[in-house]
Image (tube, rainbow, N blue to C red):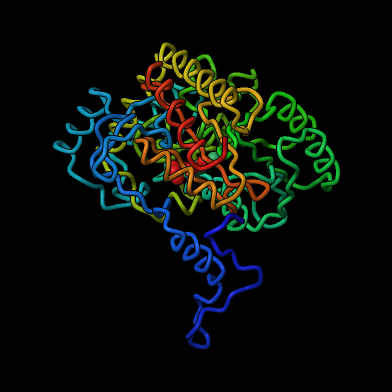
Length: 417
Ligand SMILES: Cc1ncc(COP(=O)(O)O)c(C=O)c1O
């Protein structure tokens, strides 16, 4: 641990805690946070965007800042057609549905959004949820119940783990992106059991891509169903932006694709698409779909418009790849340690020596006028502290050069370079 941040070696008990205070379980985390703030750095988990100027610029602390830590990969948040669709739906259908999809909460716009998804993926069924988190929670918990098995990559997103916990299936984790480990786990599962394998296209912490081609083949040989979460690849990876499964030629063998509107689509919401002939029954049995209000009309209108535009986004996809290669190559040349050897997605993760240095570097970059995400355990693998950079198709070549200059100055200032 670097100077200035006191990280407790042993469990800390907060002074004055009342007996039975259920918050006692957070004492270590509270001490860590207080130690971090006592070192004088700005709270990296409490930044306010005072004004958002474009997909790549915002005012933070009164200063114009380049955004390199949003999931706005395709820059759709300020697309004029998307904004217009949202305004029109707001005027024509009001601000909210005030009901569940299975009662009064299915409007024409929800159907149009599901039609856009079916067309985007070339699949028979699409189901829109209120968030991507709920899509994983709902689909996984509903199809994999007690007595079934869910085999998943150990670095899976929290919503995947929570879906498993809610469904009470047996969880069988395997080492991150390890094809042999997946195969071994599958072989140990009783032959007559129901098995769902859950994979992600791009893993969001390091920005690395899964070897879906081999993994999906192994799953199919074992008779398992496969769900792929393409949250960080939809819109960008694959010829038509359908994700890593498309890129590696296995989309037809995937049983369920999960995605979100909160990244490339540029709004909020989640979805599952599938060719399973009985998929529509999900609408009646999936609790995180049934027992919550549906998305507001303006949101589904912006999502549908954005998804349809993403179908024709090949120029933006090509530019985003250029940005990713330029940033990855530039940071590597400067001497930073990165999460992947080569650029694999729109995420470039810079590995920090520890949380203290990570927070100092994050603050130094913010002072330069650059926002990135500071990520720390438990969200990160192997206890790493990361500065996660996520690129946007709207970042210009000059902006990427400016960003590299900022990293160089900040890295020298905090003694990482
Ligand atoms: C892999 C993955 N799945 C699901 C989600 C949840 O998406 P949402 O923000 O729509 O809830 C995320 C969000 O970061 C994610 O990274």
